[in-house]
Length: 419
Ligand code: PMP
Image 1: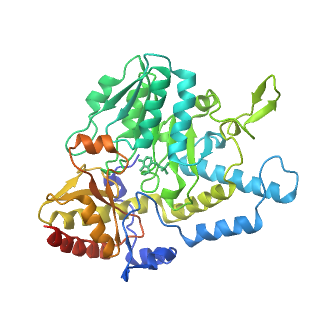
Image 2: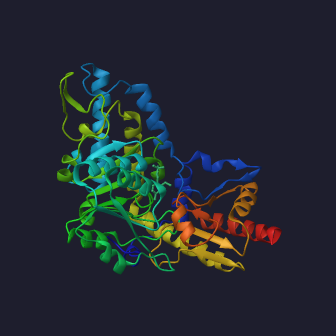
Image 3: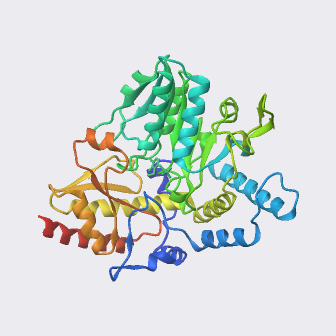
């Protein structure tokens, strides 16, 4: 995996490039309360380019029929498009086999699938699951549920004051009872890019499986699941310029093949009788019901879109944007940035003096600036920091330094109003 220092070797996207890309996103032209929209809530969801929007329209207009099993022309075309999308995702993630790609409703469902099925197949009372203090609720609660169901224990890796995981404690938590580590590639609150490669190596040296929550990583940095040697890697389409309602579970073939079905229904079966049902092979065994074949086609288009720009180029550009915004934010009196790791992605969480984050977010909104406030679905992290929440600005490649300037100017006004 490239470090940010190595990424700097790549060409920076120019202002002209960015303006050209912005033209692909009609929503960026919206005005909010009469002010031009500044959309800094990309961590929650990203905007969609025309290419993805027209793919959805095209698919409904020309490729819409339920897939698999259909003998008629349209059904076969729709099936081809859906399965081609699976190959596009496999290639995007550097997976060895297309059968290693399972379509889910999103990151959350992908984690629930693994927590349930892996829990059923491989976990028994007294076993342990390791998560980290900076996980999103989606990478905590499904594990708590399996812990409750099967009598397992949840262990938590702490972090230091810059927002980096304590790898010594991590190492000490990995023992013969540990069945799986579930860790975010990039924190949605702190922006920290965790040393996933190293963490996987440490777990694998003790025969422990690792699930990586890539929701905040795939839109921002190049990811190759084979290089990482991840057992499971999950993400949501809507955070990488694709549609809502679809996401991906990558699983190493052998591990995935050992998992029992998560949900029962159509497509996941081989033969059904009232006495006994046998199951289909991968990937279908883990995809019950009519899949979101329009969504998969649109997701593939989104992946082609970002790949054409280049994930390296996106990472370098967003890194510079984050550096610039951090520098400007730090000039504001009372500024406290939460998460100051050297290895950070395009997320900045902050507090100003004793002002409540919600008040800052409300007033910024009135100036056309969309940021997120609160616990960001990471209550245990926020509680461990003993803060009420944060204001979070999260960037995409279509954001500009000019937008950062507008945001900083507005924030200065808000701070004066609320101080
Ligand atoms: N994990 C992380 C790190 C996230 O940022 C998010 C979305 N905020 C999720 C999981 C959940 O993603 P989704 O709601 O798309 O399933």
